[in-house]
Image 1 (cartoon, one colour):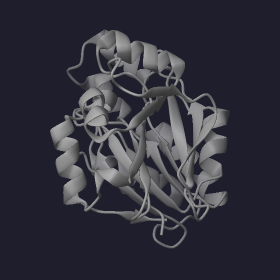
Image 2: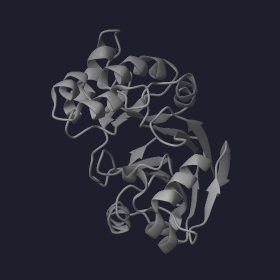
Image 3: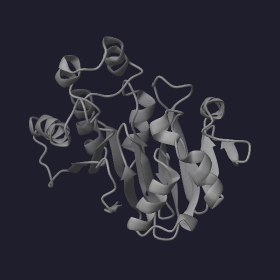
Image 4: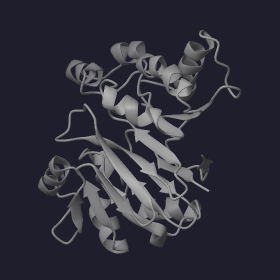
Amino acid sequence: MAKVVPLFSGSKGNSYFVGSSGEGVLIDAGRSAKQLDEALDFCGINPRSIGAVFVTHEHVDHCSALRVFAKKHGLKIYASAGTLTAMAEKGYISPENDCEVISDAVDIGNMRVIRCDTPHDARESCCFQVVTADDRRAAIATDLGVMTDSVRDLIRTSDFAVVESNHDIDMLRNGGYPYNVKQRILSDKGHLSNTACASELADFIRCGVFRLMLGHISENNNRPELAVNTSVSALKQIGMKRDLDFTISDVPAECSGKSILF
């Protein structure tokens, strides 16, 4: 049975296991290698079941463990050409790592991973959809300033999706971040707000994406319950009922050990 296991989410680090009990892939590796190993062990995932690591972009909260973790477990790293170049420049990967550009899609064991470009303040960022052996599809789509048609199309064809709900706009504007950081987050190459995320979900549900999680929730400019309530309220206004028409929850910042079956 297909499953997603959120390992970490948010500004302190991001990583997801997507697959089944026998095989899977890792989307991002944004903590230390030790923390990733501990999280995988806590969730009962053998690192040898991981076929490869896919990296969305070169920001530290998505790739800090990569050089050590991938070398330790003999894992190939897939990312866009721009991301690989940027990570090499920053020292997040080394010549000892086995790296390959994913331009469109790649098969890993009995699974297929599809790339989709995203608008973010990175060299060549992207998100991924993982297609499991039993043709179940999970999309992990965070770190995007706006929702694009291509990302929408990717999510619409999924059975499960993590969608970014990064910040509450008022909390961000009234918070302590420097003005230039606030402007970066609010820009078309920043992060999706709660309201921007909520406005997209009805379309996904109508397309059959009934299982949703909200990810990359800011610990300074948001609260998990606020992110979820914003989406639930927007869906309620158009007659969609939680746990009847859809399920939704936040992705915990720290590993909870929970697997989401889809």
